[in-house]
Amino acid sequence: MDSIYGTALLLWLSASLRIISAWPQPAIKAQIRQDSSQLSADEYDYVIVGGGTSGLTVGDRLTVDGKFTVLVLEYGYFDTSVGMNPRRMFNITSEPSPGLNNRTFRVGVGCVVGGSSTVNGQVFLRGSKLEYDAWKELSGPNSTIRYNTKYWSKDAKIYATFGGKPQPLMKNLFSAISKMPGMTVPEDSGAGEAGLYWYPISQDNVNFQRSSARTGHWEGLNRSNYEMIVGAKPNKINFDGDRAISVQYISRNDSSTPPVTIKARKHVILAAGSIHTPQDLPGVRSNFQDHSYIPNIAYSWGTTPNGIFVPRPWCSMMPPNLAAMIGMPVSYTKELIEGYKQQQHVYAKLFRKKNNLHPLSRGTILPDPDDIDKEMKVDYRASSNTLDTRVVIEIIKFMRRYMTQSDLKIYNATEMLPGAEMQSDEELMGWARGIIIPSVYHPAGTELGVHGVRGLSVVDASIMPTLVGATTSMTVYAIAEKAAGMIKAKTK
Image (cartoon, rainbow, N blue to C red; front, side):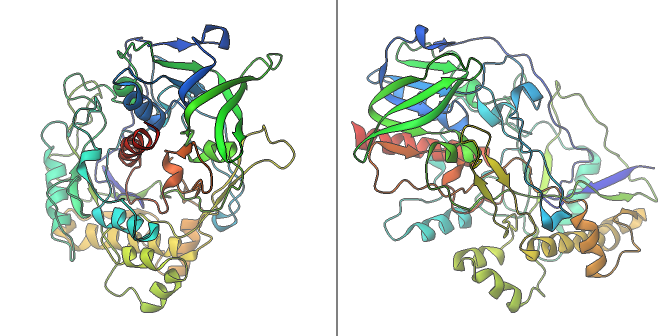
């Protein structure tokens, strides 16, 4: 029998999960260096730690007029293939999560030129205006943060596509969920509000190949003032008083090579991502967040709907994908809201809105106390706040109403997972704790504001005070665009 799956993350309404594993890409390499002997200088205007989504975006913007020199220090290597593959990923396993039956999990972070934009699942969402307004509120009255579409710049070669026409089954699913109580239907996923919408994927709309920071902010530039050295592991930022003046790095694979120091005339920029930027700064804090999800909430059709989903290869024009930000039920109590207010007043307001992709649990990213050069110790602490698990229970209940009480009830679907025999909240919570995955590779919020230091900026997802209720790549592009303008303004 045919099945339909829902998830605790975005309530995916595609009939199957489709992730690109690899696409051939042209090997256009602009000023990539393999070791320090190939560098044109030992001093640059800007030194960027990390050649991923944010690092390459900022590097592109700082070098566009040819006035300034930039060196990017990247731990990974240039790879002509894309997608999740061990050779393009860091090998990190999380600490055990007591709230999820003490299980450990893979920490998915891109280790390649282009960073996680080269390996992610390509779901391309902005988040809602309310979430960026929350950042502004948390940042104080002088904050310039706001939902501003100019930071998703039209002159960037970063592409997205909705694909072709929706298949008949997808139309049925859309129609049924749009009639659910409280559901809103914004114009599209970029309209600045949550609800039910078709969302794009990060591919160009001609050849349907992955669009990433590497393809959009590195390949084809061929600028003499823009260099990158790969296989470089930064391990120290040097200061003159309170000013960052240089970065020291060592070879990733050759421990016999002495450390190399690169001077920064104007600015050092940290863009190594939420997992590794903390490794380059002292004072790591504990605001680590990621989205968790349930792999499967499964139903089998009793009567097969007309126009059942027909999978197509990724190389062809795909039909659009559908997501629903459903919000909490009206019966959500004041007591539960009050529990969340104890963390952050502004987050409590977000929790009442449509988008509940806001984890309440907070984890840590800490250096190994026995060896500072080892990988960071990642502790999701997922479901340490039990409200996160209660949100999952409400999603299970929503799926039950959707499959059995909406327009889909004529198809007589049978619940396979977690199973109709599980009815109490306690039973559902026990099941959820054994199956929840605490990450969809959206690490953010390690809270690394650099106060009292000059010549140093952080420009990646670690600056997010709260996680947006969406995939994070579009937000990181916007952070990098805004950061590049701010850095230019204060260092010109």
